[in-house]
Image (tube, rainbow over all chains, first blue to last red; front, top):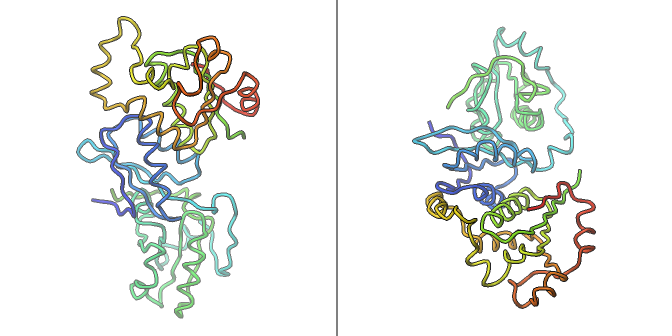
Length: 189
Length: 131
């Protein structure tokens, strides 16, 4: 399946250091939190783009291969890496508590970008990226408990607030989030 | 952690040029502040004419085909990219004097300086690389 990206760049046929140089340039046009897809045939790009992302402070999500072309997904990170964002939503639940409670019903709502979800999510969780939440809110059921999760708890904090503002009461922000998730992960790639 | 990478380019062949400019552009793309000090034969790499036809090491000429096949950017292209990303080029004044070269013999945008100019930059850099 194809994974949604906000911006795509073609680095096919290019050798080191070109994929890095082009990725760096393209990143200037990517908004914070958006996904860049880098198409490359340079095998070294797997290690390079990962190292580059870590060095520069972006989130390397993963890569797939399609007909000999590597597709890398990188999420542009703003300041969230450096500043522990304040979390305001009061109803929270820990990763561990979620593991105990999820089988009792309720849904796990993953508000990360589709690409992040594709490369590893909790089995049975549903994906509605943060940016689509308001328009897709009717997919949620007010009677169910909703456990909102993202990577570090920041987006899910905002998302939980948005959902609560629509009259949902059984909403919980899951902390610390997928970053520290120890359970099994399902992929959708 | 330091954000500077200092490179000394002291050889003038095509392979040397790729080592220097690949590392320099990759570092610049990783948001490092990069300076290259060109000295002795390394000056070839930014010489207006010299850089257009840098020699392969003797007996290694057959690699030319490999370069073309791998679609590796040319040295002038890499140099332009490096300059776009604000890589600082410093020509060694002493070597230029010895070789009878002036700033006009080199591509635009270079600085000319002595060893101390480079040392001043390199004292805070990690890594410092020599090619």
